[in-house]
Amino acid sequence: VEMAYWDYIYTGNTDSLTEFYNALGRKLTTEVIEYEDSATGFIRPKGSQAGNSALIDWPTSERDGYQGGYYDVVLNSEYVGIYDRMASISEAVGNSGDAQTYREKSAKLKDNLIKYAYDETNGCFYDSLAQDYTPTRHSSTHATAYALTYGVFTDQEMADRLCQFVYNNCKDE
Image (cartoon, rainbow, N blue to C red; front, side, top):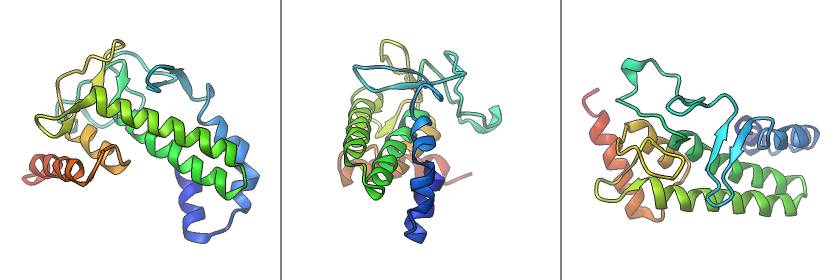
C-alpha cells in the first residue's frame, strides 16, 4: 500500500492503482491481519505471538530494550498511516465508500493508540499493549518514532513532545 501510494503521489498516474486496487485491499484483511479488535481497531498480523512482533525484526542490540506484547504499537501506528493512504488510493480510483471506511479505521486506531499507549507524562508511546490494553510500561525510541511518522498525535504540541523524546534518545547514537 505504501509503495502504491507514493508512486501515485509522485507520478499522478492511477493506472496501477486501478489495476491492483483489489489486491491492495486484501493486504488490509484476513490475508495479512490475524485479528482486529472491534472495540479499538488494534490489529495483530498473521504470525504474531505475544511478545514477538511480525514487524520488529531489528537485531536485539538495536531494539532500545523494546518489549513486545499482544498489540504492537509500531505495527498499529503504521496501520494508522496505511489505512489513511488506502483511503487516498480509494478516492483516486473513485471508491468514495471505501475511502470513508479506511479513514474511519485510521481515526479509530489513532484515537485508541493515544488513549491506551501514549505516556503523557514522558511524551512518548509505550512499546506494546497486553490483550486487555495494559501497556508494557517501556518506551523504546521505535514506538514513538513510528507513531510520529504516521501522525499518531493530537496536535503540534504533542508532536513536538514526541520529537523531543526521539531526539533525546538518539542524539548520542
